[in-house]
Amino acid sequence: MGKIMEYAEREAMKTEAWKVINSKDANIHAKAWGVLKVIEAHYWRAREDLEAMPKAAQRRIHGKRYCPGYLLDIDVYTRHWLAANKSIPISYEVIQHVKSEFGYDPEESKFLRPGQTSYRIPNSIYVSDG
Image (tube, rainbow, N blue to C red):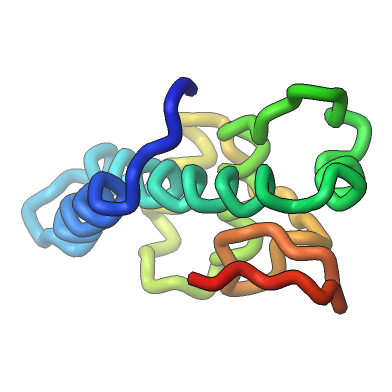
């Protein structure tokens, strides 16, 4: 994944994806792709936030994956996002399709809390401004 996706692009991607996810006419595969697009849009912001953190925080969040120059892997983020955002209004069937068709089983991260889309170290003093 190359250059960081700009805010306007991310918002447009999420808007289109939510239209598909909520469409009565879209098939389950299209809705699952929509979920992955929402996750991708959130990924870019999460990556920006993570890269802005001190190196010690990045090492703690990335764990054994961390090495100098490591960038957040979208596959790792997707699994964490699915676990953290399981209460969002997406049908069970669509989430099951994301799991079975694309191989993304939710994986909890203590740094991506329920309902959140960016990583945080619990009780940290730095916070994203948006």
